Image 1 (cartoon, rainbow, N blue to C red):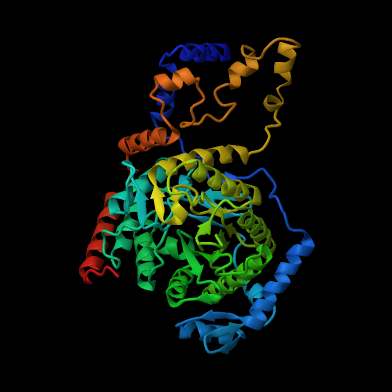
Image 2: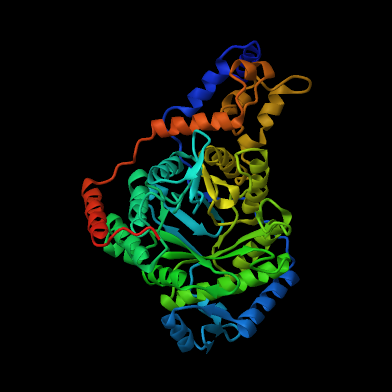
Length: 519
């Protein structure tokens, strides 16, 4: 189909024909394309000056040395720090200047997280960016527009959607919290869902050290003991309990994963004004101090264990205390923290499709893009919450998931920068067309028109009359239809029968060994 033919088709569409809808349907059908993780061709954008970065680093060192970090309810952790040369006062740990930085030197600047399908493995660090889904919401906004508690069926659905989404490189972790399964057993169903319904890399459980150990055991059934002992197959989210505290639960999971050589994202969770100072510089200082303490502790557990410097920073409404998203101040924190991570020599996690809106509406869209753009421009390596986040992280939204995935695909295209090849320079096209004519029928256009521009599966760019003829659908409705299509078309990637049976036996044995608990 030539460019002139496509223009003619659009003109026919303005007279009310069904061509545009048919072409959209064709684009959505058939085998799903899957993109590899991003290798950015754009240089990271840096907001802080060298003097500003050095000031933040100096202040973070003062926090570690003078105020310290609490490691609560974990005598082993305190003893490990004492042996490393830190000053211990109760549960407060103060660090001699340079101790944390020296320990972090054994952490890799970049590492591979292996997927059970090697084609889906990802590189975390360096010039790479990996998109992963929303993490943690107890509620979903379902396909009937109802806000309700999430179930294990919702969990499986979001894993399937992440598998189907071309620009989602990772299956994620707690894509929603399946509250219909007992708390002490749900991690087994969640990890199994990632393995069974996807072949992308995934995250393990962190809600108890034993659940972390179960995640590792299940990974060994998939990859083999020796492979897991010598390679990263799990990445896991360890939050500091800001301000300046690591609690027993997070420390237990951190130790379990780090000692097994699995990756941990050490991520202070900060609502500025409540859990850190209100200023961007203050948030950066506290974030760096907390993250360095956690990453250094991972190296005490196993030198060389992969770590990721994480930052989750939101502003709050000073009237209500509610978190706010898409605002300028957290974007400044994101840019600054990415710069600090590069100087520290470790991968960085931040950003995502964050918003405070209660529905997948205009507020959700502009707040999300106000975070996703800095995410890409700052050079974030691991992007949790990249799709599906709604209502300040309380809700996983089906429609917003695919709307966000559309934006992620656009960002992946943008990350590749300019095509400066002979074809990209297009001098032959300009010679052929010359002054005063058009490019629709020239050889260069005909050779490139199918791939020249990103084509959204959701955006409606037709005439008003065409939009009326097709039912006046808003993007949320089109997203709803796309979700239903993806779920209907889903085919699970192959999984070795012996591995599947071994996983089933492990899960049954673990579940039978304990009574149900919902707290």
